[in-house]
Image 1 (cartoon, rainbow, N blue to C red):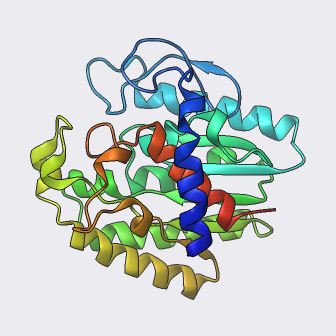
Image 2 (cartoon, rainbow, N blue to C red; image 1 turned 90 degrees about the vertical axis):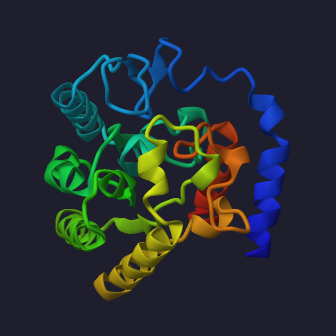
Length: 255
């Protein structure tokens, strides 16, 4: 843990070197995804300003997965999840791998489960899964989130038996400090409930023989809320937040 903290401090101190990164959200410009193709700049929450609908996102992710499968890289990592994964800047992902980003804004656990087949033909070394906060925002029960995560893990084990499967904890939100447009819905979700779900996810990972990466402690403040210096709105991450996540990935997966 001390090593993680020291590396995070080092990563935070280097953030001034990354000021030339394009804005991740809401600027209307193009954002390059992790597979290197160009996609329109998108808002982090599906809504009227979103340029693509869900089916268009599915088609794009399938194209990217097929391109990876047709020309497999030596070392492939997959990010599977929602907008928090989607907006991971390609420049900040650990450099030892080629990354396939399979995040969709607004995604829930049942949606991710249904679309795992999009990258069935890829051959990843490691798959990092983070999903669940949108379920809670939409009123889906914690038990359904947990069971969907178990199903996701089992599907990935079956289809990718040689890959490391890593379940990542759901991140907290910033509570009263949140400015996200759905702030009232965030405030209705106690962060203690998220911590309880994470404990269940850790148990699932152990039972199913996969790995668990607990990001919650390094993203939370003394009250258990998402640190305000790591978020744009109390839900989504800013550049500093992605630097912290990058550091955690590099410590967890150093090879």
